[in-house]
Image (cartoon, rainbow, N blue to C red; front, side, top):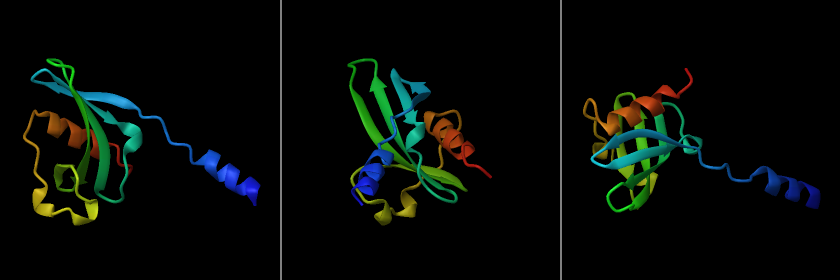
Length: 110
């Protein structure tokens, strides 16, 4: 039994983040962790990171993406089960948000 517990603990080692740059605007560079994508059907969550080139400030957040229709929001401190669908917005063309939604939704296997 102890062998099974040890094997389980080793097998559930966290996956290292895979930060991929997906956009840049107004001196801010945006990255997504492609290893953090979770979800089923048309819904996904992904961890984001952005860094300011002005002061070096960086922040992490989680985006909730609905791939059909293509809408998204950034989750802050509320539980995903409490998400109000009216908080989802369609990204404007030629924006970092549009690039994010297109890339994440493009990773869904059909």
